[in-house]
Amino acid sequence: MHHGWHGPGGRGGRGPGRGGWQQADLPAADDAAAWLQGRLPGDWFVSAPEVTVDREEIVIVGELPPVEGDFPDTEAGRAERAAAAAGRISRFREQTRDERIDIARQAERRYQRKVAWGARIGDTQELFTTASVPVMTRLRQPERIVLDTLVDSGVARSRSDALAWAVRLVGEHAEEWLGELRAAMAKVDELRAKGPTGEGS
Image 1 (cartoon, one colour):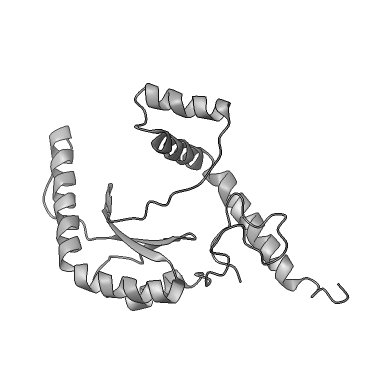
Image 2 (cartoon, rainbow, N blue to C red):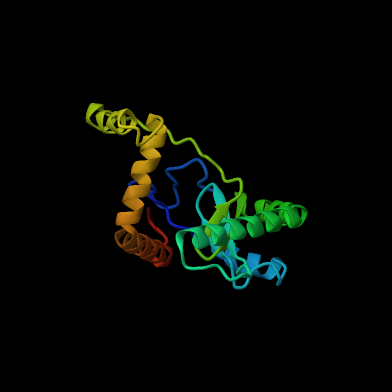
């Protein structure tokens, strides 16, 4: 069983079981959400946390109880509510630090990936330290011009920032298509697992 989805440049054309990435032999992390739900203290989050896994990282984001207080539905009231939520998230981060480090170490040993945490209250979400993974790529001039336009216009600070911005934009606008693609790739993995064992080859 394979972990997560394999993304662009995955295993296509490389033969069964051959990863296009260095981490081809990573342990599967399909049960990471269930393992973490069992491992996390029951009073941390109001519901099961959202667990997102890729080749490098497991990101755990949990919903904290709403902040008390009667905030008027005005711009100032919404700003106050967001500030109160940010303060509550900061308190959670400080109070749970040692235990989060302990859980992260166990998960990192089990799944061979870094663990990052986040917390959310309503619309206010904060991710604690997350991995920034360098991605090697070769871009031809038309692609470089797109990135440089984003930099020159002030949308992005650098080419790498512009590339991250473009990837986020595609992710937001193509989520349904990406979901279908992941489902199709999971089906291919399933069929490959059931396929002939290659006798006579």
